[in-house]
Image 1 (cartoon, rainbow, N blue to C red):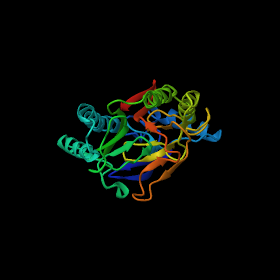
Image 2: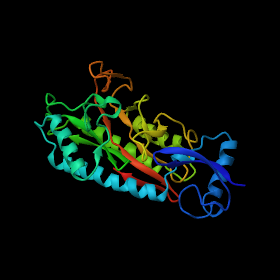
Image 3: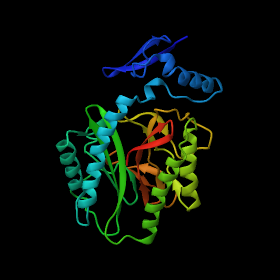
Image 4: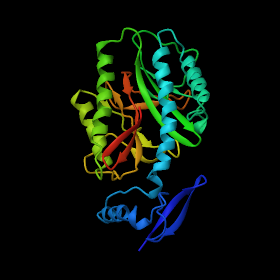
Length: 304
């Protein structure tokens, strides 16, 4: 019977029709009927049931996955380097410099740099800053701070994205617990990924663990698809119900990156830079980010 698909070719998606005996749209060079025909039939059934299903353009092929993993190696190496160097008294502009130098030394490009006008190579969000904190020579890390460093890499057009929390000097027990529980939330979300499950399962697992520990999760900003572009579909929210949102089909790749607030979930955007999100009540927020792939066995962590 065949199908219609959109194939990613030379930087754009091209619609084409594939017969059962044609090479599969995934690039495997195997006949479609022996490769992804059953996959497409399953998605068709789920779509007929009213489920939200990913398009072929969201499904990463094995060659693409290998190239994305090469990008991820750089991204994680940069964060590892920062683990050695970030300290009290450091201006966040130094973090930006390290990210740029290390990423380019290994052949990559910092994905945030000039992305939709963002001026730096990395995001450094401190205490009540929820995300998109902009590095500056005037912002000095001090004892007691918690800071999220969000690092993203473009390697030959393949993207990786992850972030880690750093605790500077003597951090209060309240902040330390927020950081640890937020990391647990990410793990809960990852463990909720089941083949042919739902993206809402992931968000519910994150939200429920945060809520059980007395925290809230930001609603307006979430995770995203990633790999062939810095930000792709689907959008990943963390205030969802199980059994809802997009079907977790093998080959789907996205980030899990909840922003967990110590107080209320409400945020606002800094009018001075039009980028940085900040908690309305001024209480701390924490975030960890991993990049994951849905597989036939459940899930694989690509970048952390």
